[in-house]
Length: 209
Image (cartoon, rainbow, N blue to C red; front, side, top):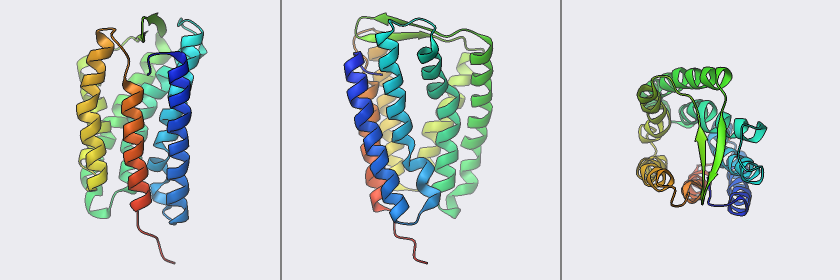
């Protein structure tokens, strides 16, 4: 989420481009297991581009709002832990089963809520506010954080650990600024994390046949 439709569009295209470079890097290294995680910035960039449509539509419950919520909630809750597990070294995979399980349960709950309740968005100065019905919100948030940030912290990779620390520290800061309706800075966090993932992708060793 950015502070305007233009910012969301520009940063979204840039983040998606970083993701495309990351995907190319791991593909050239022959590391197919890394592709889902390398493609994460593409998803984050698409998410911001979708939000630019929410801005231009002046919020509301339209298709762009629903698409934004689907990506932000059930999709990311499952994508991140699954991608980290798939790319992780064998020695770390057993401990990543817990974040994956949390992601499956959380994603299922979020998908059910989105399917049974309407999502709406409204423009609040330099932020977009989203109204999403959440049952047992405390448990859902805890499960979401365990699935996403937790999987990165337990990945066994120092670059992904850095990604997890950035996400874990940056998320509450961005959330506070967004909650105060001051300015939305999530897109800056997404851009920074995408650059960390690009560094991770380029540093992956070549798979020799």
